[in-house]
Image (cartoon, rainbow, N blue to C red):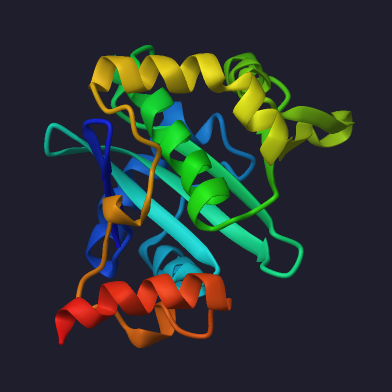
Length: 218
């Protein structure tokens, strides 16, 4: 799966990406912001990839100007309850204060609510990461629990709150990218080589759209 929108590209994580991801994830500047901060081995990375390479997880490498600059992901916790969770990290430090992370986060949030049709998405943030906490609040997230013993803040974002609170950011993105449209299936591209297991057994409203895309391979 590949999503092209607002001048950046999100490509679904593949086995060929995981060594690059492991090296970036093990960087001190990245793991210091994570709950799990131990060095990740090649074997652990392989095992992790096998656990997330399914229809419930959507991990994307973020590309900007044809260069890998970070990772963003969403996980479907329940199709029935329309409940998801997500997260992101950028390893290109010169882009951390740019609009690029904002683009990626808006694309994934829009995908979560407009394409995946989720109602709520959750996030867990280190309590000593004020930048992430502040940004999530701007998107409409609300703090649901603070666990001081684990340095963890749990947050929840409702669809209605997102489209109200994030409207200034979404409008700005559409203006600077000169793309006034919301994300749609027209921005989503599938590859013929993708295993069927990733895109079968989905709720009808998703399966119908997936089958339309896959029919182009015939």
